[in-house]
View (cartoon, one colour):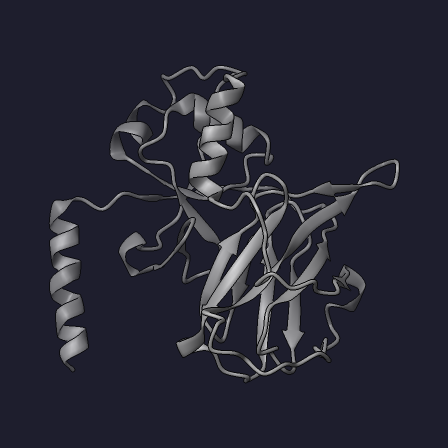
Length: 246
């Protein structure tokens, strides 16, 4: 089948904050994936599994040939595993070798503040404070089903990530950047209701959470940003140097 072409977005890729799975859009806090080096059958498989909701950056060559290229409906399992590993880079969740009690966050409480009660002093052996967990939805028979490609962004610390194919995620806050100020974890995926989880006190140690997603009836639209050329990159570097000097 043909891969539907996403709609254009005017956000500047170079101005976006890098994250482990791409860059974070300054307009909507979504993670923009770098599809510019991927084959169309890889892109098609990933988009098809997520209702064509993943925003990304594409090369000018990809965009020009978009309507002409045919995509396959299946790819080898090994290739799919490789693609998921490259994009997500998260196959196992560990919490500094500690057993943590999960907190369940549901859509019905997004307007309320959620207070983390268990606060422990940070030790010298811990390099990062981690927010780790699982994003899932309830299927028709009542089972938890992992939801991949969910965008999670910690607003105050300006750190984000996405859930992997197993619905797992991990946001690492370097110890030297950590502070206890209130923070908000936004949870977004096109086709699902957005959530805002407010931490009145951010724990000084890792916390394990499970987040239930609920599907939205809104129209699903994916967007793309263009890959900057040599001159745009050079102009941005000069502009950034002047910005830092002021």
